[in-house]
Image (cartoon, rainbow, N blue to C red; front, side):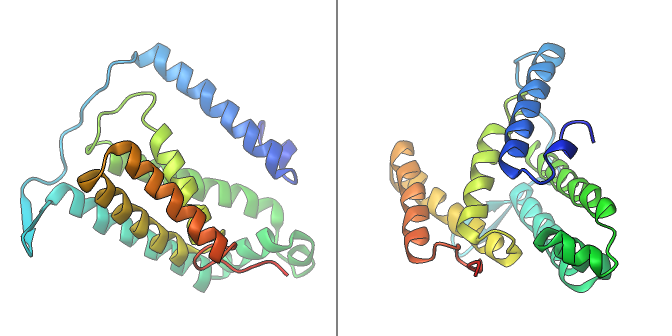
Length: 206
């Protein structure tokens, strides 16, 4: 309410405000907890071998849990009254309000869902990597790539884009240098956007 409400209809400045808020929270965490990374115990031990490829159970757990959360979000947004109301407010607040949707409740709900998803992502990621005030930088960049690549507002597009990004990153890090892998990822994004400017499953605005 304090930081984002003044920028409700100004996405660019709202994004800048959230970036500034993130930097403040990061600096506070750095002062409170220090720069040394912390380690969390794995939620699942062991590994599974599939077709000659060994997959750690901890990562399979993350994949399965993430898929379940994504499915719940997809069902909520597409097949519940509240989810459809939330989408209506995002698409056109004036028309949604005229249809009886209470927009002032939808904005906090959408924000809360976003924060909750970010918290789940952090909890799933923490046992796989060391935890520090700077843990969110790389996932934030990858999330941005996934959203652009999959198409704004498309949950199936985000799932497909994240899969393609993961495969490209794994392939690049295995057979190429890390810098070359980064080039491959951004080249993939540019090729997709040249062919489909709205993203893989996004819809072009008319």
